Picture 1 (cartoon, rainbow, N blue to C red):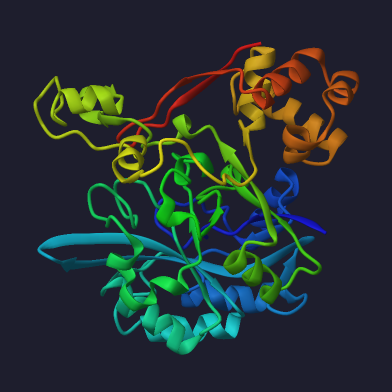
Picture 2: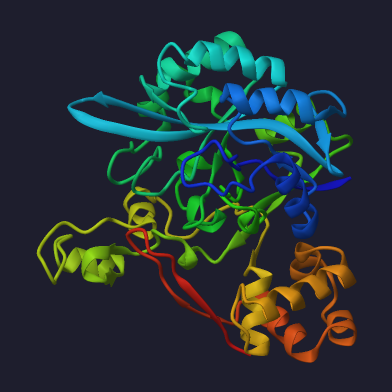
Length: 393
């Protein structure tokens, strides 16, 4: 069976997260988006785990259900420490085998960080010590370095990361079998680094609001939906048959830049300026594209797994019909389309264009076709500023 999975999410217990990110809101948004398997997010927060115990119903081995959507227990932790006279900061995504296992991991991590203070707790320990604590309590847990290329808080981040997994995880590096591409990169970019060839590439939304669910996701093909089946797919790759990706230029860190001065530069332009902002002279924040080029040892990506690029449906509808994304008229039109076709992702990646043309509108169908064909003009994001995509029909 095919399952579209979004396993990197957050609850209302995380900072800067919508209060609507409870299980009811998550399930409602997942149904609209077309996400079959959702991460609970914040799987180390004691109060959120208590809600999960009350509100989720067991639905298989390590799987839970609410509102017609299946959940796996997931969480993200922020890890920071000093090593080799540098501050290191990375985020790790955890896929946990059960609520009970998550409770045990949370208790263990509470010895090195305040797990109650944030849904994504800050842990003052090395990545090696953190994964050791996790795997001591729940050895089946899948640990996935999150949004691996972003400048801040990622394993390959230009500001606080490493040049290789071994340098970060030491003897545990071989137990890292998957990495999350993040919004500002895609599988083709990752496959320019041969050291990553052994890793399964996954994409998830990192959603802090219901509207963001499913903006990126991973397509699984499994005999059953269970924790062991999903863990096997992520650790061996056989069940991961593709990912759903935004255009990486739309991410917040694609180009080098300096937000305070409104400066966005390609890697070549930034190198020509010795990495300094041309407006104020301060260091630029190196973007994902530049960082990939730094570590790439292959001019052409090799063995790129299948992926499809999408734009959010509300943006497509807005551009096609001249409506503001998120406006009442735009939201109403999106709701009509979802009622007709089942979900947003069904419209974006599955339905034949001719069917969309017959049952929706010619303008929307043409816009979806243009996105599928890559006919999109892009203004790259930089230094925390999202990029922009314009459909070219």
